[in-house]
Image 1: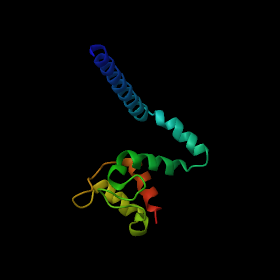
Image 2: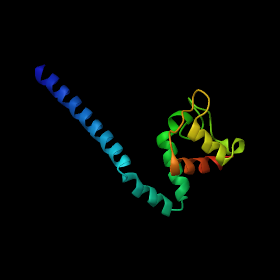
Image 3: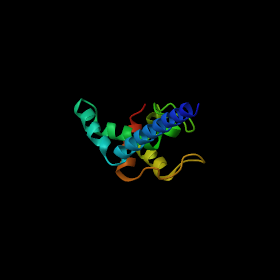
Image 4: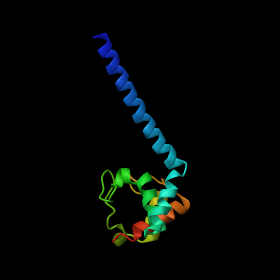
Length: 123
């Protein structure tokens, strides 16, 4: 029974290491710009470069509250936010926050501009 326990423990340790390494590798590529190459490939395949970049920024910074498909969650749905707010109003919300739930400054500068433009087109 001792050999069996050792085998099970070694297998579990190996799986934990593989999963941890895979996770570390995926986040390292994402933050080091590894995702940019695949992003430009998507752009060349007919995707809008600015829209694709805005979607990626949204996915990394906003989707956890507003949903991956803009359907909402902890934050409101944004599927038709462009019908309610202009680009400048959306940019103001991104920069300054809104109410008690939307924090200010999660994204800034050019990234905030890209996301505001992209969201303003959601009508």
